[in-house]
Image 1 (tube, rainbow, N blue to C red):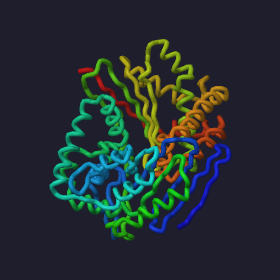
Image 2: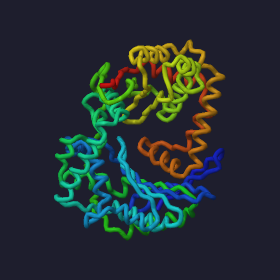
Image 3: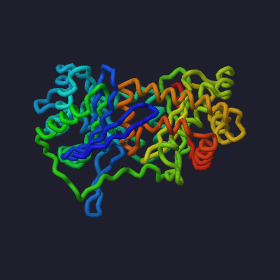
Image 4: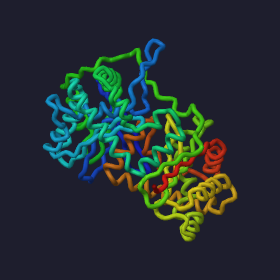
Length: 430
């Protein structure tokens, strides 16, 4: 068992990292005085993991396999929903699949040891039959149908399909009707054996806990399981090449909406040319907030002119696997607003919003949001778990914000604007 501790003096926090003999990585962040405790178990298997390489060949997975496997993990050997077993213990449990990982988690006030034992046992074995797989196919296909009438979802999906045509990002995390139908027993078993190994998993524990106690509990729980996973040294995960094809310039869809919904997407360069990923993300977030945030003159003027409302939003994904920015709003002038937004970005160097004074305001707001997450156990555990996908340390975010200068933001913004590839997607009323 290997242990190390990292202190964050400015935050008055200490994160404990332990590698158990089983290979399971454990991150414990004590938060004295908080009643809630959260435990999350991260599996490095997401929707963009398309297969595994072996002997120079790539065996591809069906789309949606990670999400399908998540559903089956939560099913007991008798077909029961294991979440009910967590609930009986006073635990709130759930799971989700993202582009890069699958996460199983629970929150509790008192029964953390029981929860840890239940969570470890949950992922230590896979109980599936051909009958249960066929049943799950129908459930997921119905789940996919539910999203067809969701305009916000369709806007996001349309943007990603334009930015990354023909890639896994252009499909739902759950796959599509055809790919789900093609998922079989061997696919699930193979993926489970590949990714659900203790040496692949990381558990995050946040709350008012005794570090030694929870480490011992996890270690005992792991040792008591019969893990059917066989270590496979000759295989490696293969992610989809998400940015090979050129960006589609635009797209549209008609739905039952009262006003057009506009999405503008920007695909970033795959290579950051020496920029550190986490710093690039923070700098880009600050840049977008300076130009389009509530404190910007641009936002205020457009709002006063009736060009936008509180539906206006921007979002960025800057990961090792893909990098993009999306801006969305409800507008009766989608073409005009697309031009305006692109112009603000390309002419940022002369914008009055891009200044030392405004950066100070935005940094204060952004740092305040970061500090707020430290006092919300589920958010903190969520961000810590999310950062695992890119090998980052979420707790360093505050220091990155504090030390980011206007020159730093300028350099990141210039790289972004110079290399970005743009698209738009609009949902019009029928």
